[in-house]
Image 1 (tube, helix red, strand yellow):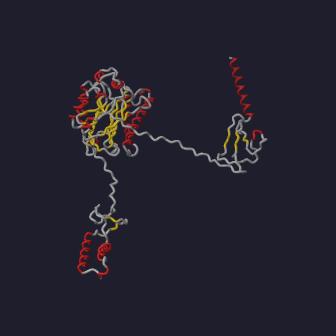
Image 2: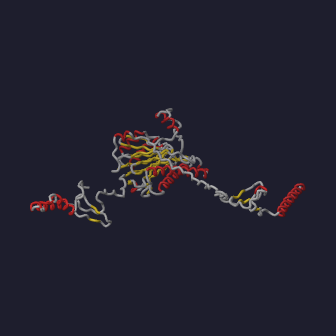
Image 3: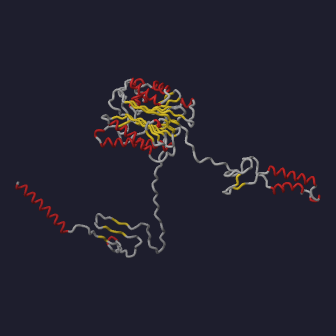
Length: 473
C-alpha cells in the first residue's frame, strides 16, 4: 500500500483553499490575483487527487497502490494467502532385489515397494520412479525364519499386512499420524503371524524381521524389529540409521565384544525379538530428515553379514541407478559365500523441496529415535451429585433415588421397595417396620410338589433296578 494518506474530496479541497481568504472579512473579498491563485491551487489539487472509489459486487471498496481500484482487496487489508498448498517436489528412484544365496534351498526373504498415493505396488517400469505424494511411499525388507517354508510364509504375511494397514484410512494428517500408522501396522503384522503359527502346528516358531521405511515430504520414518538394517549414504558417508535387535549387538554395546570379534562370534544369528514369536513386539521407531541426493539402503543380514560397510559404500557411490546397485551388491554377497538369503532395496531422493546437505548435515547424520506423542488419556465420566433438598417444616421427605428391588437370599421372596416419599400407612408395630402397602411377591415359577416327588421316586426305582441287576450277575 502507498505511504500517502487518503486524498481529500472536492468539497474538502475547496474548504482548505477558502480558509486563507476568509481571514480578513473587512477587505471586501479576495482580489483577482488571489482568485487566480486559488483556481490554480484547486486545479493542482485535483491532479493529485485519487481516482473515484469503485464498489465491488460485495460492497467493498478497493484501491491499488497507485490509487486506482482493484476488486477483491480492501484498502488497508493485506491480500490473503492461497488456500491450496502445492505438494512437495520430491522424486524417488528405487529398486529392490532378493536372491536365495549359495547355501539355502529356498528364499525366506521378502520385500515391498509401494506408492501409497497412487495405490500401486511392485517394480514395474512406471513404479521405479515415484513422486512422493500426500500418502507417502512405503519400502521394506523382511527376513523370515522357521524352516519348512514357514519363514517364507511369515515374511510374506508381514509385507502384505503392513501394506494393507498403511493403505487404509484417510490421508495422514501430519508426521505423527504417519509414524503412528507405521508402528501400528508392524504390530498388527506381528499379531497376525503369531495367530497363524498357533493355528498350524507345522508353522510353530515361525517369525520374521521387519525393517520398514515410510516417506512423507522430507521425513523418512523407520520401524525396526530384528536385525535387518537401514543405511543412509549422504555425501560419501554411510551411516546405519537402525539398531540391530540381536545378542551380538547387545554385547557390543555393553563393551563385551569388539566389532572385529563380532564377525566371528558363534551366536551372531540370535535375535532378541521378531514378528510372530510373541503376541506383542516393541517397534524401534527412528527417523531421518532427508537431504538432496540421499540414498537409502534396506537389506537383510544376508548382505550386511557378508559384505563390509566400506565395500557397500563404494558400490552405492559408484552406481548411478538403484537397479545397478542392487545387482552389484547381491553379486558381492554371493561371491563372499552367500550363506543366507540376500535382499536389497535402494532408493535415491531428489527434488527442489529437499535442501542441499551442509557439512553439519553430513557429520550429524546418526541413529535418531522419533518420539511419538502420548495418546490422550480417557477421562472417567463424572457422575452428577445427587440433589440435596432441604426438607421444610411439616413436609414429607423427598428422595431422588428410583424404586429399588432388594434380593434377599436368606428369606427367599423378592421384596419390592416403593419410593421413600410414600410415608403414609407406615406401621412401626408391624414386624420389621415394613410398609403395609409394600407388595410381597411370592415365587410362582417353581416346580409342583407332585412332580418333585415323582422325580425322586423314579430315581430311587432306577437305583434299585441297577443294584438288583448287578447282584444277579
